[in-house]
Image 1 (cartoon, rainbow, N blue to C red):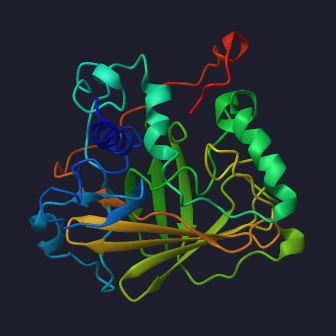
Image 2 (cartoon, rainbow, N blue to C red):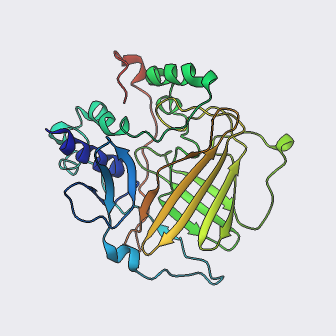
Length: 300
C-alpha cells in the first residue's frame, strides 16, 4: 500500500474512531476534488489532508434561541456503531483490520507537527513519558482524559444560565459530563480553587461564538498521547462556532509554567446528527486487563 493511500485511510479512521468528524470525508488536496472545508496540519511536506464537507451542511440556516444566540443544542458527530465489520473500509490499518491499528495509526499522527512546545527543562521528561506511554499515560490506567484531551462533547444541552456537555464513546471518558455556567459569575479565587481533571469552566458569548474559559486543573492529565504533560496553572480556552449544521471547535492551551507559547490545536469540525431522536449510547464500564501483559513499548 502506498504511503499516500495509507495516510488517507489512517486519517479517515482517526476522525471516526475519535468521534470527532462523523459525516465528514477526508481527501488529499493533491489530485482530489476542490476542498470546501477546513484543512488539518497533517502533512508530510508535500500535501495536506483536508475535510471536504457537503456544502449544504455549511449553508444551512442556523437556528437561534430566544436570546438571539446560535442554537448549539443537539447530538453532534452523528450516530454510528463501532464494529470490525462496519469499519472494514475506514479503519486506520492495513487490510482494514484491528490487528495493526496501533502501529499504522502512528503514521499520520507522528506526521502532524502541531504539538505543544515545551521549555528546554521539560524536553527529556516529555520524551521519556512518550517512550514509556504504556505505563505512564493516565488514560491507560483508567483515569479521566481531562480538559482539553477529552475533546468536544457528543451532546450539548443549551439552557438560559448554563450549558451541559455530555461525553461518551471509545476514547472520551465513559458517560461523563461538564456543566458550564453562563450567568456571568467570575472564576473562584486561586487560593480557594481545588485542582481537578476538568477544571472550573465558565462560558460566555463573543458574538456568535460560544467561549468556554477553564482554569483550576490538577497536573495529572496529559494534553495528548505523546507524553504532553501540563502544570496546575494551565488555562484552556475552547471556542464553539456554529456554521450551518457544523460547529468549528477550536482550543487554545496556555501554560506559561511549561510551554514556550500557547498551543493552538487543529480545528475539529463537529457535524449535527440529523436524527432529532438520537441519544448517546451507554459506554461500557472500564476494566483494566492489559497493562500487566504488555511486552513491547508500542502504543502509538
